[in-house]
Image (cartoon, rainbow, N blue to C red; front, side, top):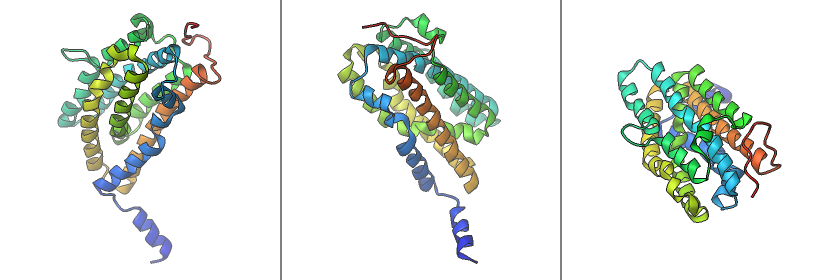
Length: 252
């Protein structure tokens, strides 16, 4: 067997759970949106109220599609045990006897002085944000179930970012304090969701090719999250050109 053949065989070896986790974590370290300039400005306290309003309003479109995404994933599985576990995500977002993630996000938007009705209409969402979010739904609907579940594994990195964001928002934007319930809840929800999704992905990615498919799906999700912030940065930071019909902060 030649050197090339040996290398190819080694490269196709099925990864252990620890090795796969390391691969996925490396995607997050390089590509997750915690490194985006818009988030860096936020965490350093350099965003204006208007820029935070633009973020809250546009991000709501993404948040509003998360339970739809999870409903699509539920509809694609024939495994009752999987569906019972995954539907927890719907309750977390839509609420189940209490305020869910969507309601908490609206409270955050209201804390920036935006009207709830204005945010819910999604009429002033940036085209780039809308395009990226819709592309995420398409990934979940048109890819394999493995890809759909793997794309949710950004939750593996979310807890660190959420803790960082909570601290930054409390220090730099104290007027947001009463609107941080979404992030406080996700501190415990995200790690639990990530554990289940990772175990499912590891069990169902039975070949190295399928494992690489899961890695690519996670990479794609990170790209779509980054693209949303690209649109926000271009419209509200530099050069600061919101397109016609998009949200425009009031002059301060």
